[in-house]
Image (cartoon, rainbow, N blue to C red):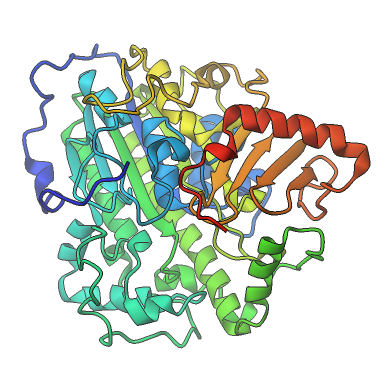
Length: 513
């Protein structure tokens, strides 16, 4: 279900000067149809927002969007990995449907995305920043400024970014390879065709005494993304646009500009307490054990860099939102703030994502459209990031897409997996779906599948020990209740509902034990 990288490199610098007109034959949207602006960060842990009462990292600009919209406190990503989550979001198809399940995968170019759909309805579709396509396919975006454009902008200063890629505090693999496509280096997965790239042996690893980047603030990728997004809106404010502004941070490299790094000194970082993991499955305990003997400075450095990155990302979000207000577009633009997945940040002694615990799989999610949607409201309804495509289509009054592909494709589903939750956006008091689903590591010996209802969360680990958590009495998921005989019927009911969503036995990707 994957394709090889092909085509030309992504749009060059200056592509924003091209004539931005819808392709012939596409519908012209009514003048009063709203613009759509999706602002994404990468790896933003959902509980790290000051509007939630957590002041560890001030997020005043994300809070501004939430104050003028509806904040969803129980939104789940489809798969806690960048590529898998993003491709599911773009297509409304779960990762087990598209086959894009690791950060090395590519979405088959034949799948229809939100960009195709809005473009076909007369919108100018734009993408500025990271989407982790791993190829030069643009997947329906008529305007695309990628990370490659920023690397060209940097010129010789790229050396600093290469050094940061090589200075991953949690994994020396990046020192040996200087190959982290998750951070856009390279932006096209097959650029070096598996051969060592020219940066290997030509980088300097940080001493991690400070996480301050050597790049000036204005030279950072996220500053570039903010500037180019503002240019796009200025140039196209007289035509309905669908724009995704996709920031890299707080994802690695964990080196924010000095102003933000100084707020989180490495030596002053406290690590989260770790609970007893005895009730967890063996594969989870092994991962926790793998972090136990890591250098304490590196763990603190990773946390300091992550928090500084998030604070800096919020300031970049503010630049884009300020421009929307200054251009007089705020009342006619649906603004979404979200992220592709979360970050463990030391919870349970784990870092990064790659698991189905709440900090990894839950994402921040806000929808704002002043004058048309509720403002300052909060919904605790269970929602899924994969439902963003049909939700936005519904809110904008577009007809449902007729197909999940742009050309005939054997094996493609007739309709999207995900469902719209636009009714909850319009009325945050509604309960919404009775369950949310996610999955992870479908190509491993022990793939995992999650169902979360209001009180309980069940994880089916194919070939391993399963998990059951009571999120009302144990929101931190400290005690796995799968062996509790009093909850056997609860576990069985959740298992049956999960299998109705997706039967693990049908997983054709699974590695054989």
